[in-house]
Image 1: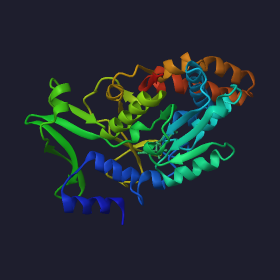
Image 2 (image 1 turned 30 degrees about the vertical axis):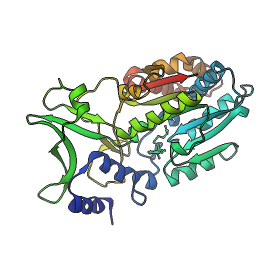
Image 3 (image 1 turned 60 degrees about the vertical axis):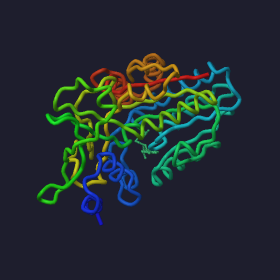
Length: 345
Ligand code: SAH
């Protein structure tokens, strides 16, 4: 059976499903889900993430981790948690880049949180030379202790709910079936939703609001851990600081946008991350919001690029320059990708 047939059966038996349920089935279904099936990353895959563009990305995150560790007074024991590690590239670059920092690796116990069986196997292969790494399918399984947490393009994979303001009031955007029996979006009246009335009362007609209950619960869990044990986090994703009032739900296959309801399970589906909502879930934990470009420059990516250029062959030089530009320039990833950092001692 295909994912499409599975979804149609679900809708026939219980009515239209939420966008969140649709995203969850398309990405995480144990048999047909995108992350269980595909090799999403890299040139041959469906999209390229920052760690796959250049080693400099993971190295800068490594520098952030060591500087936080030093600010914490170099504790002898700390958990380094990565959410959604993909191919394990970021962690590999981070560990290689920090191996000369005295005492840092000895202090680390590394915890990879990955829900895909296939990607877990790939990460285990990539990182087989490192000790002290354990894998978990949920953050809740990671032992409770002081931590540093990193996540790149993790939150954009979490299922969102969508609401739309119509002439008749707020509706929820759901996935149902049209008269031809094809999957399609349907706007169904939503129960008066407190969040919509509190935060989006002045939204114009046609405005679409997206919420991500899964991101909210992950953030609340992280905030609770930080309060109990101390910890810092660095979250990077494609996202916005104030709601754009339009749909950000998108499917991508082989580096191109793909129709949402075609070949479900074969295209990646993401939504942009609402950074203000993530920050709000941190409650009273101090945080800072910035852009990927500013973050990487503040960690010294320019100097690192110059160092790499110094040792590079002419062909490699062009690659290094273009990777650098892709990561930091505002019209490339520099501004669209946002960074949320927090720290609780
Ligand atoms: N951080 C990587 C990969 C980003 S893609 C990079 O930058 O290249 C998203 C990753 O999150 C994948 O590894 C996917 O399998 C994982 N993932 C998605 N939803 C998850 C969930 N609910 N729990 C744990 N991992 C999840």
